[in-house]
Length: 230
Ligand code: DC
Image (cartoon, rainbow, N blue to C red; front, top):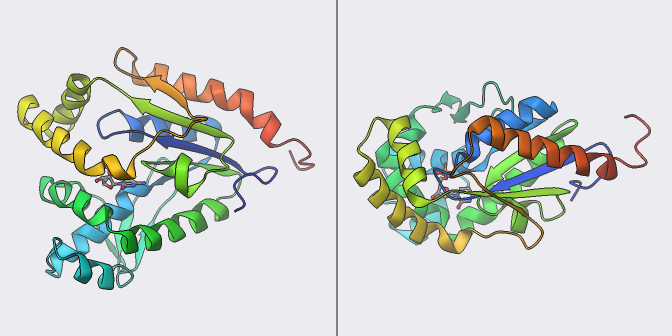
């Protein structure tokens, strides 16, 4: 799969929404000089395109038949992780409440997952030096050979507070939305047996990043053993 080859260091970061996964993954990628992949943005991009068409996102057969139609591209610079659909920048459009409300239903369709996982593996394999890839199934399905896997979680209240602050929304409404999405995402989300669990409830973002960078420091020399270029 290429994710355990010398000099190509892959960090898999999984966990529920609001755990601070994206900020922590971007920060860790920056600190480690790695690329960054937000796989959730790809599920969001497909959902945005379906809604824009418009196509009924609840029609599983229809969504499955359309899954490969849009050209979805993501930038892997941790300082500027853009998302494009058919050449149009949708980086902001994919973060709306409307897309968030429908993306779980799209992401659980097997044909959608097969298609996007194939693209995710290609992006990971092509990342020069390596990549921090974040999502729900990176350590278990997308990059099971990753030398470092992190499962980032936080208490429900702390996650809702983080999301509500980001979106300028009420905490109770956000927590209810979050509980609904957690249920829908559960089948696609799993902690790999060999993932390191980080509970971010009482940690600052800087502390979470430090922990991931520290773990990477332990694993990277082993992953790169035999690499003459490093
Ligand atoms: O992390 P996020 O909220 O941007 O993810 C958007 C949706 O995509 C969410 O419903 C979970 C789903 N997802 C997934 O099923 N597998 C991934 N690897 C990443 C996200």
